[in-house]
Each structure stands twice: as structure tokens, then as C-alpha cells.
Amino acid sequence: MTKKNETSATSTRKAIVTLLKQYGPMDAITLASKLSLTGMAVRQHLYELQKQQVVEYEEEARPMGRPAKIWMLTAMANRWFPNGYLKLSVDLLHSIRASFGEEGLERILEDYKLTQKKTYREQISDTKKLKDRLQSLSVIRMNEGYFAEVQEEEDGSYLFVQKHCPIMEAATVCSGFCHNELELFQSVLGDHVTIERVEYLLSGGRRCAYRIMEDQGLSS
Image (cartoon, rainbow, N blue to C red; front, side, top):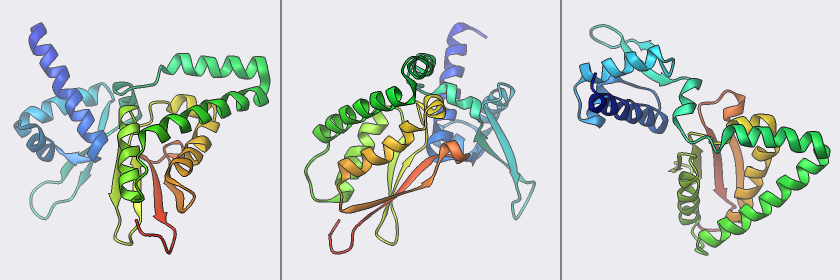
């Protein structure tokens, strides 16, 4: 394979992995339609990604014909996405804990949280509409590598979804990051909304998701 072809193949595989991260498991034909490629071409890339342990599949029965392969990402796929200076972050957390103990680590996380709140508030408009504030928040988080999006639910609530966590390894070492995330969202969205984490990557979920609802009596 020439260098040009190799670069093209890598680019296509990156696109496949990104689509699976963004939209969840799907079959090769659906992937092919999104990429304007043939099903055969996409399958070749999927089998190569499978060799690299980046994707895996489950068979799904169909009314006619053979079962379809539904492709999904493995944990190995995280290396294809922003990792927030993973090793440096994890090493720093270990060093801070060793030098200053849990109390020192908590103080540093508190300072970081206050800085985040200030930065987010400067970027989120003062609009009274919850949906607009959530869209602004999703843009911020998307730019930070979280693959964030807002989904409107039938009951009037919203689902704020993050399909990738660029600091997942750091959060594994220090759960304070996840606690601070929930408090950060509450702070920038307002006290008049209820936020509940309903899916959690560190608990084996495919994504982190928060159900957010405007308190009764307030319009979104």
C-alpha cells in the first residue's frame, strides 16, 4: 500500500470509529451510506479495525436472510479520541495525592472547578430558555472532546449526552472529577433545574448521560 493509500485508509477508519462513537452501534450498510462508500469497502475497514481490537460485532436476526453484523466500539477505541494529556494528568494526580494527601487533592480540584464555572458562565448566554443554555453547554463540551449533544424527551425533559470522556483515566484515579462535573452543570444551568445522572461510563455504560428538567412552574 502506498503512503497516499495508507493515509486515505486511516482517514476512512477514523471516520468509521467517529461515526460509531457519535451514533452508536450500526451495521456496515448504514455506515457505508453515511460515508458514501460501498458496503464491501466499509466491511474491509471494519475487519481491519477488528484485528486492531478497536471494534467488535454482535449478530442481529433479520426477517429475511442471514443475521446482520452490528458493529460497536471496544474500550481500545478510546485511544482514537482526545485523551486530555492522559499520562501527564494521571501522573500528576498520583504525585499530588502522595505529596499533599486527599485533602490537598480536593483543594486543587475545588480551585479547578471554580475556574471551570467562571469560564463556562462567560460562554453560556443569559437566555431564560433551558434548551438554549444546554446547546451552548454542548458546544463547550464538544470542543473539549466530550462528543456532547442534547436530546429533547417526550416528557419535556432533556438528555445531555457525552459519548466520550477525554479524561476518563484521570476520573478513574480521582472520582472528584465526576462529582465536580455534576456540580458544574448545576451551577451553569441554574438552581431551578433538576439534574440526574442516568448513564455513567465508569459504571460500564456506553456514555455519560444526564436527565435535566426545568422545575415545575418555570418555562423552558
